[in-house]
Length: 302
Image 1: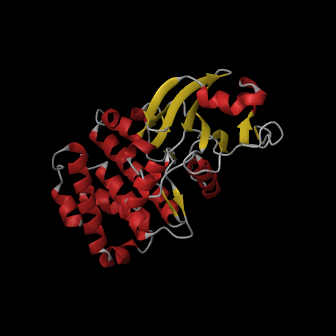
Image 2: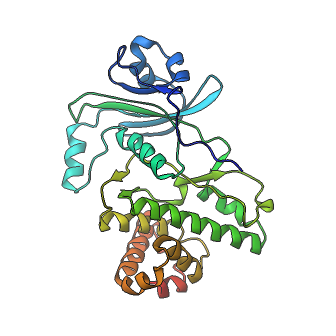
Image 3: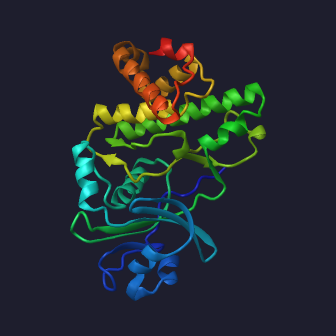
């Protein structure tokens, strides 16, 4: 089973500094689809199938030359939004730059993600900046959240094998992020995608390549702060609280996440595990309006 390429060749993606200095890069099909003298405004105003429309951000899907793309546009944030985030000690997301840079960094680390087909930003006033990023649609892919009800219909042995493999792949991916100074900030099952297939025929040695998506809030530093590591891990735990995971499943994740010396790290981090579980439970209660079905195994895990 092949995976979608995560890099873009120079022949496919080029800069356009003469006609519009704000355009950082555009794939050839995108350049051909919009007027060269007003490409930025044309892309910001394009219509398509709306996937998200919240405040100053909009995500739509369009088809260009028989290929589907997602266009994420960021309009003016306004000073009120900036001040509100600052007061809450949050870094406001003003442009599509975090996602554009995040895709490049994940490519460097060998983490499968989206393929960028265009990015641009204009303006210097933080409250008035505008930007967009265009990514190729991951056709014939499903999120892990979408796969849960599909896997639930499989036999016990097959379902367990798939669950264990997914846990291992997520753990390895999370380790790559956090040991290289990255944090996602929306680290949920719905942001991991893998290629659709007949899961009845899946075997334990088959590939399960996970693509990490929705990077618009990703942060990059020399080292991931503990605060953001906790946010990623508690978000991930929150998204699996409804699943019938066992203590062995949680330990399997830690083994993949911490590596060879995971048992030593486990003994030294009881407070950390307890805090992550506490935060995940509180997030579930706030989002779902009820306490989560916390398994007894999770209590002993923390």
